[in-house]
Length: 218
Image 1 (cartoon, rainbow, N blue to C red):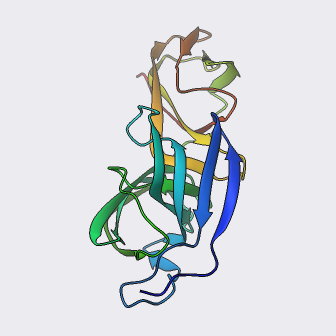
Image 2 (cartoon, rainbow, N blue to C red; image 1 turned 135 degrees about the vertical axis):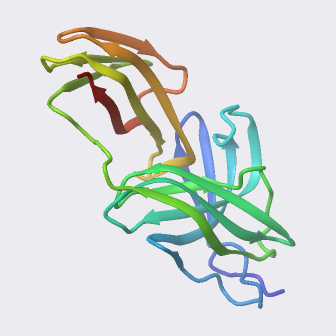
């Protein structure tokens, strides 16, 4: 199998030093990997990754795990998608959640499948996905402030808001989101003017809120 000669190393700073080797692997017939589109999702780049593993929330260190750069080319919020791909001789799974319209994310193979430069790596299908049309990105009913690993939410409306939640993702140094995983922080019920603070070990300077959700009482 022919080796792709366009390998390049990108160093990215997130929670330590991360490495991505871009454009590795080949398609199932030995061809260079091509951009693949699946219903509003575009698989733009195939790579390898070494560093803390985000997809299971463990942060364990991994080496040479298959990574894919995925773009949401639609005008809707992507709740979730499951992309299948050949990773060497195995079928890999790449789960993408919480990706805003126009957003791009580096997603790692769900089980940490590793890859060598000589092995094929190409997306094959994405049959399981859901786009949300009613996503709320900001609201005059809620204000959100962040400090360290804390989020503070205030109900700015004159009605009680129920099931208040924030959804956030990690961003790395190249400006793309990092990890298919998204995080949820619940604030429960907030009376008019009420403020609640929550802390999360996953939230920090490299986090970005991607969606809000709540229901108005009555």
